Each structure stands twice: as C-alpha cells, then as structure tokens.
Image (tube, rainbow, N blue to C red):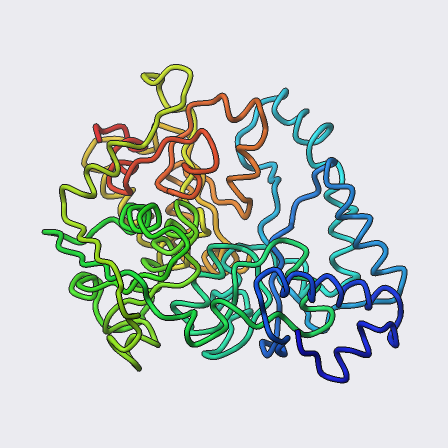
Length: 424
C-alpha cells in the first residue's frame, strides 16, 4: 500500500504508539482487500455499530480505554446504533433479571466511554442516523467509515455516499486517523452492477420481501433494479426513502448487499443509467410467484409453530416519522373495522430518539398510544438476544429481525391484521 508522508508518519509512531497501532490496523485491513492507498474521510460525522454494553465484550471496552488513556479522540463526532434496553418494552421479571444482571451490565460504562471519545449527543443512538431528525446525513460523494449494514447500504444507494461494509471497531479506527482503505464500494469500478434485477410484479412489492429475495440471490454483489420505479416513483420523497430503507436493510441482512441502484430513482442510476451495468451482468426476474416462493421458504423456528404471538416488533431498521403516522392511521382504521379499541398483541414500534421526540409533538402520538402500541428507541435485535426472549413467539415485518433472531416474518399488511385481532 502506498502511503502519504503524513500517513507513514502516523504508522511510524510520530503521533504516538496508540495512533500507530490504529494506523497499522487500517493498513492491514486494506492489504487484505488489496487496497492501493488510504483516502480521507470527508463526511462531517461518523457512525458506530457497537452500541451495547454486553459483559462479554470486555476487549472492546479495554481497547476504548486504551484510546482514551492515550488522549486519542475521534476526528469526527459520531452517532451509534440503538440502545439495547428500555423499561417501557414488555419484559417479565426473569427476562429483566437476565438483561440487567447478566447481559448489558456494562451499558452505562460503555456509554461514558463513547461520550468521552466523541458521541454527538445523548440521543445519537439509532440505526437510521441518516434521518433528518438525527443530524448525521452524508452528502453525495462523501467517503464514510461506517459499519452498520442497513445504514451503509442506505448511504451508498439512496444518498450516493461511498462506504464499504466495514466491521465494528474498524469504523471508529477510520474516524480516529481520518482515513479508510480505498477498495470495493469506494471505487467507480466497484460500484458497477453485476446483476440486473427485473421487477415484474402485478402490484407494489413488499419492501422487506423484495429486498430479501434480491439479497439472497446476489449476495454481496451490486444489483441494478429495473421496474421498481413503476411502483415507488422517480422522486426520493419520504415514502420512497422509507421504502428503500426497509428494502436495503433486507438486501444487506438476507444477503450482504452494500449498494444497489434503482433505475430512474437513486442518484447514480439517474446520473449514469445503464452505464452502471458491468459487462456480463447476470439477470434475475422477480414476479409475484417468486416473492411467494421466497416467503413460503422462510423457516419457522418457534418451538411450537402454531403458538399464539406474544409480542410484535415493527421498526428494524428504525421507523421514519411518516411511517409512524401511517401506521397510526392504519391501526385506527383496522381497529374500527374490527370493532376493537386496542391491539390484541403487545406491539412495539421502534424509532430513533429524535424521531420519537418529533412524533410526540404531533396529535398522532396520543392516538397511537390509545391503541395500546408502545413506542421505543431500542434495538429489537438486542432484545431478542436474551435467551428467555428468543423462546417467545415474536412476530415482525422486519426481514432483518427475522434473519438474526427467532422472530417470525409477516408482511406489513399481515402484521396489521394480526395485531388488530383480524386474520392475516
């Protein structure tokens, strides 16, 4: 790898042993992917994936402390993934005991480290840091050092920023020295599509289901999606961005997609069109039957597949402000149709703290609360990590949560019917 004089000086220890170790780590990481150089991070803020104070993660806390003891701080302030705990989310005595005494025992300690290292503010905890309310929205062309998979794919695809699917800790190391290795999705060649996906459905495809199908097919490659603009338009408005947020999270978790292009919609597809398609790109056609096949092949890993759901999570990744409003309208209408006043299944909607703050300023908040739905800032994945919680029959419309936990997937429409006491 060719380093600049400044980069070489850091590696040689001119700014201290600790920064030299950080630089060495990044150089070794870049070498593993045959990166020829390091390039400057240009975004105003960073985002870290590691947000939870699990006792078993002591090496992370030790590393953070070494950085702090050496007087090292991040070149950028940063946001971080969601907190793992919220007393408002349903949990029985034993589940809470496990959460607080055996799992997230280092949460307060770790959050103190994050603040000392450069956390943006006390509310900077969300997997959707790029939402306007959160204040960490990169610009087109910005070079990032992120690791959260759903945020990386959104930043690359919808915002036109440039970021590889880094690992946790690599994200903060890039931010500390201000550089990342130049390879993969940072390069023009690495952003070309090696798959052309043709959407030929008879109705608007479910975002999480379509993303799942594409992710499982193309894995870590880049898809160029044709025909989706027919259903979600050619403007990146609130509805389209919310759709692509959920779609992208499914491509990233059900596969390993870090970038997708949507014809006539996403920035690079609008600018370059089919010039983004690499020579020899493969083709994948998605119609109604294909989506039905994908959903029918999801495994149900509940101990009792016929068990009645005990909890529902919606919002993985976190919901947008408009999604919270839309869900409120839909739940009220469905409850009215079924002659009920409250949801039949304990239901938690998760969103970023700043999004919830704005939501709570609207009349929708009281209306949603009246239906019995709980709003929270937590990460549902972290809740489901509790061995006592993973045994519960939990339902969700998140393909990310389905992939990583025992939660069972249903479409948004099916979830709406189930939680309001109707039949899916």
